Image (cartoon, rainbow, N blue to C red; front, side, top):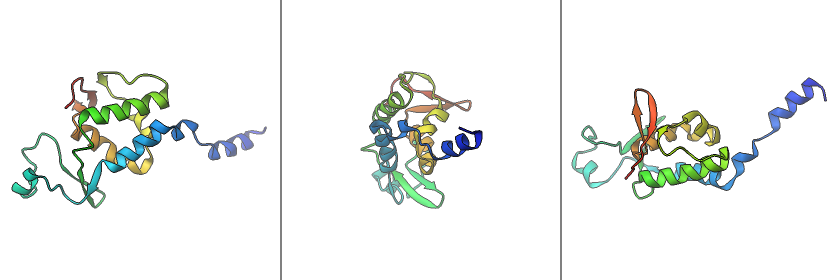
Length: 142
């Protein structure tokens, strides 16, 4: 096979790991983790949307689309469980229980249009903490 044929063939090959059920499920989960419109929880209504004193963000703006985090689906432990399954399926290795999260590796199995939702979910759920620009997996998540 010529070099040109190999290069053309590579353009049409899709990484089969992206179709594994835990990876597909994580992408669906990432999409379902946010609802349309601003947060309407009691705190957000009482503060008229001012989240300045909140530990974790409730309302997000993804390229002009205002969304809110669905708390019932996105506890840190739930996010971690879904990520662990997808990580194991995609990398064939366990996700480290603490330390730095390799966000670039996670982005490899997250659909490109969902990348903008990934970091906000990880931070807002408390699953990771930004420490000097590195995402540290939190050992105990609520």
